[in-house]
Image (cartoon, rainbow, N blue to C red):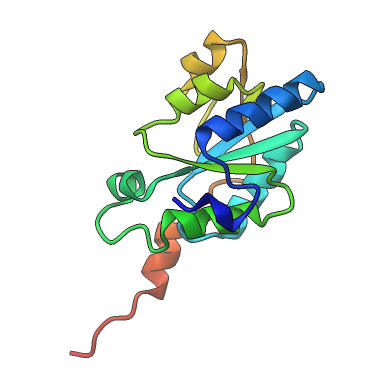
Length: 164
């Protein structure tokens, strides 16, 4: 991935360095993640609510391969570097990184955020990485508006049926 497109898009090692510096200055670190294939208002509200929980918001974006595994063939519509650039341009987002593992567990262990923010399609007890987050003293928080928005649903609505 070309991380030169924005100074806020960092590889894991550089991101860890920035988190250590921020934590040493007393910052509360919040982590959010997703595919962000087709950005919609639900994503924006999720990220705004996540940022409200702390001082530094880091967003992990699923790699192209992992997005394809989660969403199916034909996805993502935008490559990971473009999705990262779009998310990094949001005022509430401090740093973005792309992860290639099937879950964010390894990234969470590397960063050890104070809060792992997930959307309202989860409960604190259904977040897959909740045990990982709690293992280093972090908290899981459910944020954003109700799950009334979906990239997949938007894509279905936008689909053009060929003429018969």
